[in-house]
Image 1 (cartoon, rainbow, N blue to C red):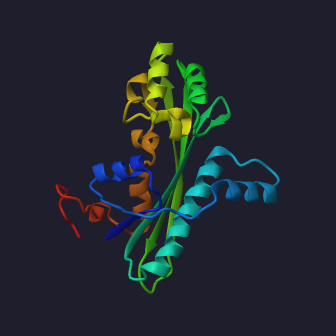
Image 2 (cartoon, rainbow, N blue to C red):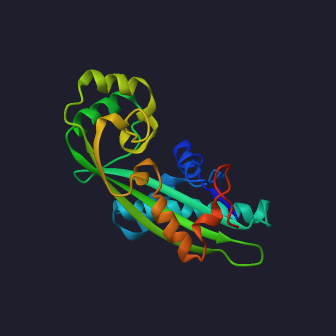
Image 3 (tube, rainbow, N blue to C red):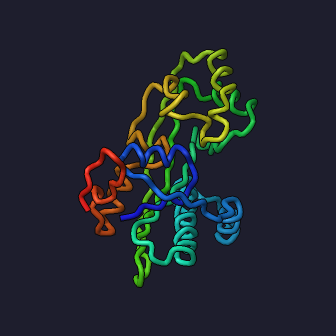
Length: 221
Protein backbone atom coordinates (compact mmCIF):
# COMPACT_ATOMS: atom_id res chain seq x y z
CA UNK A 1 0.00 0.00 0.00
CA UNK A 2 1.37 3.41 -0.95
CA UNK A 3 1.82 6.27 1.50
CA UNK A 4 1.78 9.89 0.39
CA UNK A 5 2.93 12.58 2.81
CA UNK A 6 1.15 15.88 2.21
CA UNK A 7 4.26 17.77 3.23
CA UNK A 8 7.85 18.36 2.21
CA UNK A 9 8.99 18.54 5.85
CA UNK A 10 12.33 16.70 6.20
CA UNK A 11 11.50 15.90 9.84
CA UNK A 12 8.15 14.28 9.02
CA UNK A 13 9.66 12.34 6.14
CA UNK A 14 12.52 11.08 8.33
CA UNK A 15 10.04 10.12 11.06
CA UNK A 16 8.13 7.90 8.65
CA UNK A 17 11.32 6.47 7.20
CA UNK A 18 12.53 5.47 10.65
CA UNK A 19 9.16 3.76 11.13
CA UNK A 20 9.71 1.64 8.01
CA UNK A 21 7.80 3.78 5.52
CA UNK A 22 9.26 5.52 2.47
CA UNK A 23 6.58 8.06 1.56
CA UNK A 24 5.77 9.77 -1.68
CA UNK A 25 6.06 13.52 -1.06
CA UNK A 26 3.53 16.04 -2.31
CA UNK A 27 3.53 19.71 -1.31
CA UNK A 28 -0.05 20.79 -0.53
CA UNK A 29 -1.28 23.90 -2.31
CA UNK A 30 -2.78 25.55 0.76
CA UNK A 31 -2.62 29.20 1.82
CA UNK A 32 -2.31 28.45 5.53
CA UNK A 33 -2.66 32.01 6.76
CA UNK A 34 -5.55 32.60 4.39
CA UNK A 35 -7.38 29.47 5.55
CA UNK A 36 -7.07 30.41 9.22
CA UNK A 37 -8.05 34.03 8.59
CA UNK A 38 -11.12 33.01 6.59
CA UNK A 39 -12.41 30.54 9.18
CA UNK A 40 -11.77 32.91 12.10
CA UNK A 41 -13.55 35.74 10.25
CA UNK A 42 -16.50 33.47 9.48
CA UNK A 43 -16.80 32.25 13.07
CA UNK A 44 -15.90 35.59 14.68
CA UNK A 45 -13.31 34.14 17.03
CA UNK A 46 -9.71 33.00 17.30
CA UNK A 47 -9.26 29.29 16.81
CA UNK A 48 -7.86 27.31 19.71
CA UNK A 49 -4.47 25.67 19.07
CA UNK A 50 -5.96 22.18 18.62
CA UNK A 51 -8.55 23.57 16.19
CA UNK A 52 -5.86 25.49 14.30
CA UNK A 53 -3.54 22.53 13.71
CA UNK A 54 -6.36 20.12 12.89
CA UNK A 55 -7.90 22.49 10.35
CA UNK A 56 -4.60 22.91 8.52
CA UNK A 57 -3.73 19.21 8.67
CA UNK A 58 -7.09 18.33 7.10
CA UNK A 59 -6.86 21.02 4.44
CA UNK A 60 -3.34 19.95 3.48
CA UNK A 61 -4.28 16.30 3.19
CA UNK A 62 -7.46 17.10 1.25
CA UNK A 63 -5.52 19.29 -1.19
CA UNK A 64 -3.13 16.45 -1.96
CA UNK A 65 -6.01 13.96 -2.28
CA UNK A 66 -7.54 16.26 -4.91
CA UNK A 67 -4.19 16.59 -6.67
CA UNK A 68 -3.73 12.82 -6.81
CA UNK A 69 -7.21 12.42 -8.29
CA UNK A 70 -6.06 14.57 -11.20
CA UNK A 71 -2.50 13.36 -11.67
CA UNK A 72 -2.45 9.78 -10.33
CA UNK A 73 -5.99 8.35 -10.51
CA UNK A 74 -4.72 4.82 -9.86
CA UNK A 75 -3.24 5.76 -6.48
CA UNK A 76 -4.10 3.13 -3.88
CA UNK A 77 -3.02 3.93 -0.35
CA UNK A 78 -3.17 6.68 2.23
CA UNK A 79 -2.47 10.39 2.28
CA UNK A 80 -1.14 11.84 5.52
CA UNK A 81 -1.39 15.51 6.45
CA UNK A 82 -0.05 17.23 9.54
CA UNK A 83 0.44 20.59 11.19
CA UNK A 84 2.04 21.66 14.47
CA UNK A 85 2.30 24.65 16.77
CA UNK A 86 3.88 25.28 20.15
CA UNK A 87 2.06 26.96 23.04
CA UNK A 88 3.73 28.53 26.06
CA UNK A 89 1.60 30.19 28.75
CA UNK A 90 -1.28 30.57 26.30
CA UNK A 91 0.90 32.21 23.64
CA UNK A 92 1.31 30.51 20.27
CA UNK A 93 4.93 30.34 19.17
CA UNK A 94 5.30 29.56 15.47
CA UNK A 95 8.44 29.53 13.37
CA UNK A 96 10.72 32.40 14.49
CA UNK A 97 12.42 32.90 11.08
CA UNK A 98 14.76 35.59 12.47
CA UNK A 99 17.74 34.77 14.75
CA UNK A 100 16.89 37.59 17.15
CA UNK A 101 13.40 36.19 17.65
CA UNK A 102 14.73 32.68 18.22
CA UNK A 103 17.27 33.88 20.80
CA UNK A 104 14.66 35.85 22.74
CA UNK A 105 12.29 32.89 22.63
CA UNK A 106 14.86 30.45 23.97
CA UNK A 107 15.82 32.75 26.80
CA UNK A 108 12.14 32.92 27.75
CA UNK A 109 11.56 29.15 27.40
CA UNK A 110 14.46 27.76 29.43
CA UNK A 111 13.38 26.09 32.63
CA UNK A 112 9.73 26.18 31.56
CA UNK A 113 7.20 23.77 30.07
CA UNK A 114 5.12 24.31 26.95
CA UNK A 115 2.79 22.16 24.88
CA UNK A 116 3.24 21.02 21.30
CA UNK A 117 -0.06 20.59 19.43
CA UNK A 118 -0.01 18.37 16.34
CA UNK A 119 -2.95 17.86 13.97
CA UNK A 120 -3.23 14.67 11.90
CA UNK A 121 -5.37 13.76 8.92
CA UNK A 122 -5.27 10.39 7.15
CA UNK A 123 -7.24 9.72 3.96
CA UNK A 124 -7.78 6.27 2.50
CA UNK A 125 -7.63 6.71 -1.27
CA UNK A 126 -8.30 4.06 -3.89
CA UNK A 127 -9.62 3.98 -7.44
CA UNK A 128 -13.38 4.14 -7.93
CA UNK A 129 -14.04 4.75 -4.22
CA UNK A 130 -14.72 8.04 -2.44
CA UNK A 131 -11.89 9.06 -0.10
CA UNK A 132 -12.44 8.25 3.57
CA UNK A 133 -10.82 10.34 6.33
CA UNK A 134 -9.85 9.87 9.95
CA UNK A 135 -8.33 12.72 11.97
CA UNK A 136 -7.14 13.62 15.45
CA UNK A 137 -4.93 15.94 17.48
CA UNK A 138 -2.04 14.80 19.66
CA UNK A 139 -0.31 16.88 22.33
CA UNK A 140 2.97 16.59 24.17
CA UNK A 141 4.40 18.65 27.03
CA UNK A 142 8.00 19.80 26.53
CA UNK A 143 10.20 20.96 29.40
CA UNK A 144 13.38 22.89 28.64
CA UNK A 145 16.51 22.59 30.75
CA UNK A 146 16.87 25.44 33.24
CA UNK A 147 20.65 25.68 32.93
CA UNK A 148 20.91 26.45 29.21
CA UNK A 149 23.38 29.32 28.97
CA UNK A 150 23.13 32.39 26.75
CA UNK A 151 26.23 31.16 24.91
CA UNK A 152 24.58 27.80 24.20
CA UNK A 153 21.45 29.54 22.96
CA UNK A 154 23.48 31.81 20.68
CA UNK A 155 25.42 28.84 19.30
CA UNK A 156 22.25 26.82 18.71
CA UNK A 157 20.47 29.66 16.93
CA UNK A 158 23.59 30.30 14.81
CA UNK A 159 23.21 26.81 13.31
CA UNK A 160 19.95 27.95 11.71
CA UNK A 161 18.13 24.82 12.87
CA UNK A 162 15.50 26.50 15.10
CA UNK A 163 14.53 29.23 12.63
CA UNK A 164 12.10 27.20 10.54
CA UNK A 165 10.48 24.92 13.11
CA UNK A 166 7.46 25.53 15.32
CA UNK A 167 8.55 26.72 18.75
CA UNK A 168 12.16 27.24 17.61
CA UNK A 169 13.35 23.84 18.78
CA UNK A 170 13.85 20.23 17.74
CA UNK A 171 13.96 17.20 20.00
CA UNK A 172 15.57 14.79 17.54
CA UNK A 173 18.56 16.88 16.46
CA UNK A 174 20.76 19.68 17.82
CA UNK A 175 18.06 20.96 20.18
CA UNK A 176 17.59 17.63 21.94
CA UNK A 177 20.23 18.11 24.66
CA UNK A 178 18.50 21.30 25.82
CA UNK A 179 15.19 19.52 26.49
CA UNK A 180 14.93 17.80 29.85
CA UNK A 181 11.57 16.05 29.54
CA UNK A 182 8.82 15.18 27.07
CA UNK A 183 5.46 13.95 28.34
CA UNK A 184 3.42 12.25 25.62
CA UNK A 185 4.35 10.51 22.39
CA UNK A 186 7.89 11.82 21.67
CA UNK A 187 7.31 11.64 17.91
CA UNK A 188 4.62 14.32 18.32
CA UNK A 189 7.40 16.80 19.03
CA UNK A 190 9.23 15.76 15.86
CA UNK A 191 6.19 16.57 13.73
CA UNK A 192 3.66 13.74 13.88
CA UNK A 193 2.55 11.24 16.50
CA UNK A 194 3.24 7.79 15.11
CA UNK A 195 0.92 6.17 17.62
CA UNK A 196 -1.86 8.54 16.52
CA UNK A 197 -1.21 7.76 12.85
CA UNK A 198 -1.39 4.04 13.60
CA UNK A 199 -4.72 4.51 15.38
CA UNK A 200 -6.15 6.59 12.53
CA UNK A 201 -5.00 4.01 9.98
CA UNK A 202 -6.79 1.38 12.05
CA UNK A 203 -10.00 3.41 11.96
CA UNK A 204 -9.75 3.16 8.17
CA UNK A 205 -9.28 -0.64 8.38
CA UNK A 206 -5.58 -0.45 7.56
CA UNK A 207 -3.11 -2.62 9.47
CA UNK A 208 -0.08 -0.45 10.21
CA UNK A 209 2.47 -3.12 9.31
CA UNK A 210 1.09 -3.32 5.75
CA UNK A 211 2.50 0.19 5.25
CA UNK A 212 6.11 -0.92 5.75
CA UNK A 213 7.89 -0.57 2.45
CA UNK A 214 11.51 0.20 3.27
CA UNK A 215 14.46 -2.14 3.23
CA UNK A 216 14.87 -3.83 6.60
CA UNK A 217 11.13 -3.73 7.33
CA UNK A 218 9.43 -7.08 6.65
CA UNK A 219 6.67 -6.99 4.05
CA UNK A 220 3.28 -8.08 5.34
CA UNK A 221 1.16 -7.04 2.35
